[in-house]
Image (cartoon, rainbow, N blue to C red; front, top):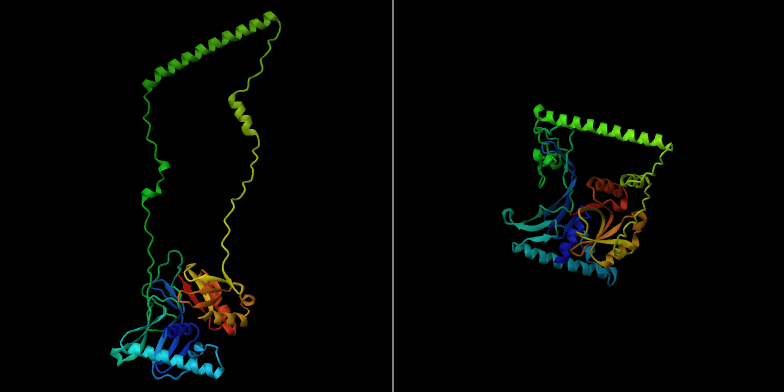
Length: 361
């Protein structure tokens, strides 16, 4: 039965409607985007899984996943049908006991005793395999979202699973805005004129004495010159420490370019048929545009042989899930808006019209 639940999860990502023979029909409803002005959020388009209980006929979608490739086509179809009926019988017996059957990360099948034992599907509230997160509505400067208006882009009774309210900016305390280096200097006390008066007198006396000494020295020098009749030879000026520093600073400084530090080489990524292989949870958050979901290496090998992905999508790769599933993606982007725009471009190709976005976070 584990294979059956894996095949159901795989098919829900590729088909919009398929049958679970004898029990009911799975259906994918596509819900358009919705704008909520009151909360300032934009909810992107999303998918919703529904299960209609009833005696559904086998449409062959699940049965083809049970083909083993051994024997003639008739023998393969017969063996695949028997394995599918055995897994469905085991799933039905478990539902009869009242235990739920988990379908991957999308939700679970249960037999509701309040609805006469009708089989229903309950979505996992935390599953984001089909959805993108809500985007905050950017308003003009000074504009506040009106609480009374709400402009839905579609009519529905369902509400989004969880909404993250925007956290208002906290005011910054004034203590943080003041830099410790810009502390105010304490005011200086004005000096009294009585205290400065004797100091000014002593300075004047010193200046007068210095002038007299200078005149005496100058007179002695003139007397020596006139007496000898020969000019005195002036000694060569001795370079001072300040002059030496000034000359050294005036010299042009030639900067030698620093060699960039050698960065460690990134480990070589594992590839398969030329496509790089990534693991679930290795790089998050990341939006993968899934174009194919496969369960075995043989299925993946056959798919890559029949599709020239690198010629169509140079950024294509393989995403290995924890449950063993292999998902082929055409692009891997971080921005949700860019991912939506790129998915629309991929869906223009008829062969990839069922592509979808998986958010790994």
